[in-house]
Length: 265
Image 1 (cartoon, rainbow, N blue to C red):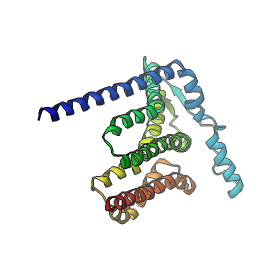
Image 2 (cartoon, rainbow, N blue to C red; image 1 turned 30 degrees about the horizontal axis):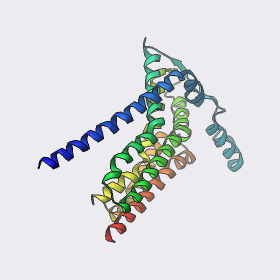
Image 3 (cartoon, rainbow, N blue to C red; image 1 turned 180 degrees about the vertical axis):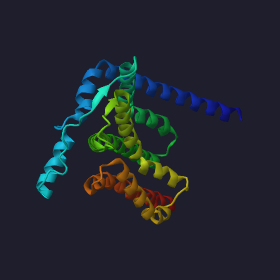
Image 4 (cartoon, rainbow, N blue to C red; image 1 turned 180 degrees about the horizontal axis):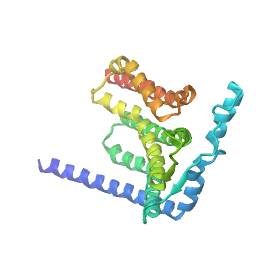
């Protein structure tokens, strides 16, 4: 009993140091982001308001090529930014730096996770674990890129041009704008982890591929509803948002089918 307790405490000690190392990595990358915060805002955040942003130019070229008009050509987003809090700009600098620190430190965080779980695995399990961690890393950054280059520009354009009455002027709180961008990017990175989450649910037999297949039509309806909410009222934008989510759902079914087959062997 004492040996089991000692082994448990040893694992907790190892976990604590891995968490500390991960936290220090986040702090280090957050500090680097904070030292370059002006460039980050000018080149990455406020560039989303420019009509020359790569996403806007790409959509405009597609519109001219396939629809022979400028339906998808977004003009410069007309938003009047204002800061109404004394410490608003400083707080947003900290927020963006922290989010940037997490994004940049994510590969190292996964590395620390790998170092923690590897000693307790068999050789055949390490192969699957390596693939899983690599998949999680790729999916996370694909989600971040999707959030930044697809969801954020389309959402900004829609919300900035949505108008109830001409008497209302969009004087946007700078804080709400920054929080929206940060949330969209980070949430997309998390959502793209769906296949990894499904993998673990399948491992613990909490869900099966048959259930996911039976829920497919409901999942597609929910995805379409969500896409219609966060995008402008045109079919193309909704398709652009929906397709990656459809692919993630189907990939999750393939993932859990793989788990079920490996368990039968």
